[in-house]
Length: 440
Image (cartoon, rainbow, N blue to C red; front, top):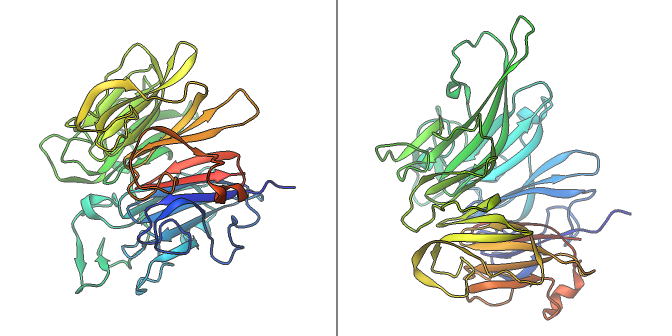
């Protein structure tokens, strides 16, 4: 018998992006709903949720099924095209439940979904097929060059209705655009076959970074040559893409001045105006604004994971025989997890006050709040703690005050409504004042 899994969510929901069947913020964790599916359940048969990506007012996710297929789902506001062609763009109300999204032109050619990401009003989908280059599709708003296909301000409005996007002619709103990576590689000989793999994809509110691996196959049968590069596009005024001169945006993929050939990238995180990369050596590379102290310094500890809020950076580090979480940047909503708030930024990488009786397993960052999975040596299993911005109830505590110190969010025996849901946490995700728990 397959385990019973439920996707729970809490937080901001003005455009239905939580997919819970309403436009009301959810102050406690509430089951997501899927079109033409049983209430409070994931689509059947389902194995797991592999990705959840959140824009300003829309959410997309990948569901991996028991037959090894993967499907793409979306909820919220798709009027800028961020939910694809299947979204009814003349509709007066956004989707309040998750709908299955289709990219038929590529899926019919044998591609499968690999990963998704989301910027403010733009969605990115990576497709893969054996023995072929990966395909990165973008759809939605092209503000700040977010689509990665050129332009950046080529959009018009008609009266007070939905935005009309004009890209490469007059493609329909929601038409997926193929992001071209050919120009970012240094070799000029294109006569030999080359495949490009999107190894990782990261989206902040206004800029995107992708790690690409290009493999060239020579005609003489010698060993293939591989090249790894980091590329980015989108907003760049604060140097978050390594551009000098204060350019408003970079509208096509451009190589970042961060080298990952000799020192591989193992983690990357994007804030609103900064980019941070963790290398295999333990070194950090950072680009962009440091006005809030969000660019971290590197101590003697070994860092194994990165995360960014809009104006902060978080580092999971190994300190002796335990994992700790360091934070730096803005603390106006208590998002640094130090037990207090402060309008001024912190420029010191200090330790988050996590529970001492449990071990840090993993963490994720939202716009200005953070969740961590804590493991226990007892039979109780994993728990989830959270802290930071809570204006929309995204902590799921039933309250709206900011949380300045890590507080247990799941399981919660004191919240009676939670007793009817499975208690074991499988995975967690965060968005723009939204939180997501997959429980079993």
